[in-house]
Image (cartoon, rainbow, N blue to C red; front, top):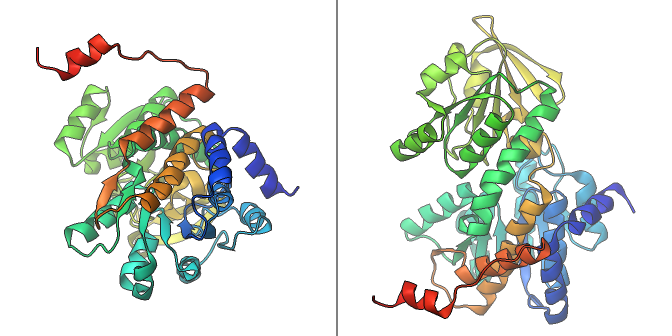
Length: 402
């Protein structure tokens, strides 16, 4: 057994929900004759999702959704299982795009996407494949935003299930998963103490909430920047300082971007940063920190430690960027905890089957409630947790006039 196969085995041992789904899929083969293109950050948990879909009968092609998040030994393990994989760590952008395109060569009936790249390619560059597509599942906030934009423009050509919007996804993956894995990546990459430092969390959605919560737990003083007044109030009432980025830039020691938007740290802020400030991104694409502008403003740069690039600015200050400004928890570590991704990938597997069994319009749909409930119940059962059930009297009280 090679290292990648060991990683897959260790992860699957702790993926109790996916184990149960695998047993069911193995008996029923719901994806027999179905082609699936999958592009998600390629590490052990993702590989197990791909294996379960293949065991369920799918003909599946796999690529990574980010040039720096593929684990090569895991990709090899999938190939040994008979799944074509088009990915390697450290791809150039052109090679990365080429590999994603190769995933679509399977002529997919179903697309499982992370960031919307496969859906985008199908709509703009691989239109000849659209006639085969039954639907797609999307893993991330960024991808859902892109798919909703297609829907709003009346351009969406097949239904998309926004797995990211499932309660068993965003309430746990975005908050607890990113919250833990982001700090795992920052700490193992820098080997620095977090306690006592000023941590600036840019954005206070579910990801920002998780990152801020864990930073406080590590002893940091947390500052939140926001553009949404409601979320700003949330951050304030959760006990965090809230200020504009132009002010936060002057005092922050570590910055974590979590917005899904572009240029939230850019040339407006670089010269305001303290000497030694550390910039990291926990959003899907490497656009939140304006790396192109930083490249123009630098005097010099050098790698000072694996995954840490030092930029020297004209004012003599040094700032450090982790993982090229890409998704730090996967570029610099192993991504979300296994049990968190078990929840998310269970939703992916069941949502993919839902696309096969339901006639849907060309819209973006939330995860059906029955799938969320099923996944939640399997999780509770696997962890030995029992909960109460409503009595008939309680149901009547909640549903009938009184």
